[in-house]
Length: 286
Ligand code: ADP
Ligand code: MG
Image 1 (tube, rainbow, N blue to C red):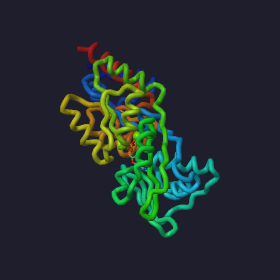
Image 2 (cartoon, rainbow, N blue to C red):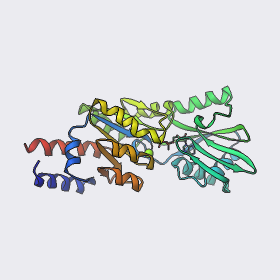
Image 3 (tube, rainbow, N blue to C red):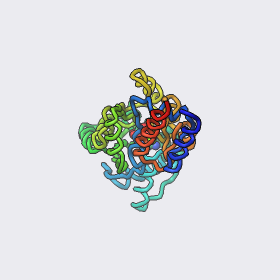
Image 4 (cartoon, rainbow, N blue to C red):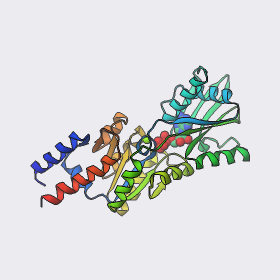
């Protein structure tokens, strides 16, 4: 494409809230074979809400809130909201330790306490009944975190984050264009698959630790150029590894800096519009 065509293309898209860093990004967008999506905040709204508490509600939420008050994870916000709704006031725990992709550990009332997923649980035991409850909640597309202290589990908290209204339509449009769609998430396989079914995504790569997201993108590049859409700090390496990194405008600064395309409106239909624009720009000028 001529420089003028590129300026026209990227100028028009900027007015629609699709910021494209340069002509190379726009050109590469036309070659993409696979589009990979982060789950939370990308396919979903990113405003998770507590839906179920297993165990004594006040006790479980109080301990959970004490653990999460120092956390920046979206799940922490959901838990703090639920605690507030019960008029519980969190008190910050000592020795706070966030473990990426797993959860939080800290000292509460002199006891070691934790909240997080099963990866954090190597030393703890989940009863068969709790395991079944967890499976059921996860099949409902809810993320389940385990809350415990002093070497035993005291409860489970289920948290739901709805897909964005346009996610399913965007996935369908990408599939119509012959692209493969993949979800890449640190969340559990069962939850990830339930959300994937709701939005119609082709494949799911779940239980991925933040440090492994970029390697997963690299593996997918064996089948051709890959676009990765994400919003989190964790997504930055995948955004730069992908042939086209697409950051949500609502995302963290580091995600936005790492993206070649920024979607100001956080609307995944704008992924489709960006690809259409690329096709128009690079098919028109030969
Ligand atoms: P995602 O890929 O969905 O952004 P993350 O890698 O941030 O997910 O987290 C993956 C999983 O780790 C969460 O689904 C949750 O089970 C657990 N986890 C991470 N941080 C926390 C936290 N602060 N509190 C509870 N659980 C957490
Ligand atoms: Mg995210």
